[in-house]
Length: 189
Image (cartoon, rainbow, N blue to C red):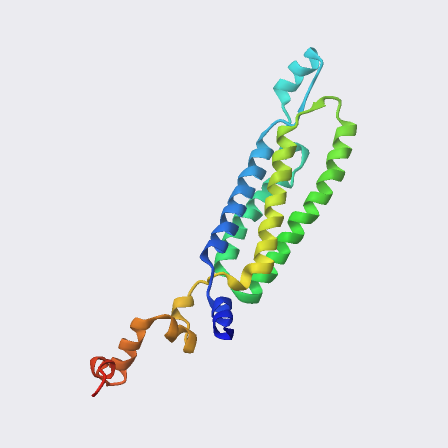
């Protein structure tokens, strides 16, 4: 039973890596979408006419939306390219940025609502908040599940685990050492 528990720890879970990639991709899309939407609308018709010519977007209200979207995209490359403790460290960084930004989001949103004359639309800020939340969740998954995710180049790893994982490799190892793999596979009576 101890061997099966140890084998489960070593076996990478591909679905976990795909989950992180999809979370980061969705985060980038939501943050970018939030940056392109108009966050505030005027209730006065004359002011609405002036605002339609100027139309401040979410990126005008919160300039960090586009860089955070780019960080989410870069997070995909970081999650796929790293392994072991660097992946966990990277996940902690993403969780810290996502969680910290959500906290600052509420402070900034309350401040901008108080200083803006128009009525706030709900869609843009909620998209941004959802994007930051997904960024933080992806970071937490990387932080706590990074050791169970497959790593790039794992098939080229050396050692006993790599040889045991690939049964065809035993045949090639036998040929490389000068032994006939078909003779060792037959049992002598």
